[in-house]
Amino acid sequence: AKLEEEARINTLARLEKGGKKALVAIKAQHPLRPDGMPGPEYAMRLEEALFLKNRLEAQGLTVTFMTFGGVHEGHKTVSLAEAGKQWLMKCGIPEEAIVTRPVAFSGNDEDRMAAEYFAEDEEFSQLHVVLSAGQWERARLYFIFMGWQPKMHPVTFLDAKPNHSTVCELWGAWAVPAFAKGPEAIAEVTDQIRKKHIEAAMK
Image 1 (cartoon, rainbow, N blue to C red):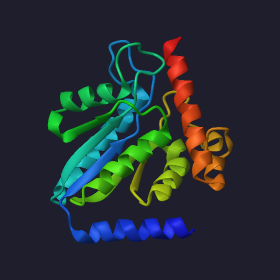
Image 2: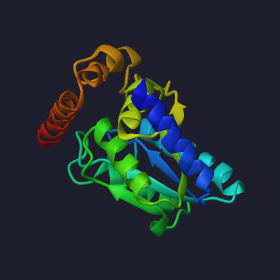
Image 3: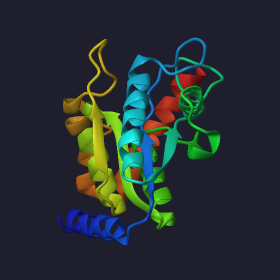
Image 4: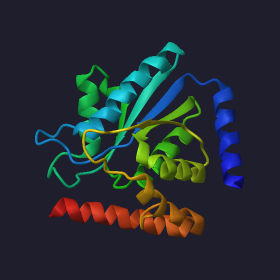
């Protein structure tokens, strides 16, 4: 609760500084399509990010996108971060407005990298995260752990079974329980997720 309040104060203080930039972090999702472009679950998040861009620009903000993810199971050569970048560029987003983090291999990695990037530039007044509805709880806890309370934009994917289950995020071996055990437990779980994805991609 103390960390949550500190994160609220930090986020409010940054907003009140009046910087003219917004960071939109788009959590990635494998598998990619055979041509290396995002699959339907990932594409839905990217589409939501584009809608968000229009609203932020209407507020006079300059939008920077972040895409994440290395080479995952389902495609042997294209990283999730690069697939998201190429999708955005096909929609008219200039390359210089997209920051990629292809070394991310878990949701915790994505959240940490987005929080660090946001923290480093005080011109960012708003932090937004586009994610699966099933990721909300774990992502919010991790951002609080990092000192921020971003605006979350959950996407509900119905066309197939989504990759993230709310129940598994809350009680699964990789998920929320680690946060109650402190930084070392979170780091251990994050490393386990990273290794799982790298091993799956190499098969």
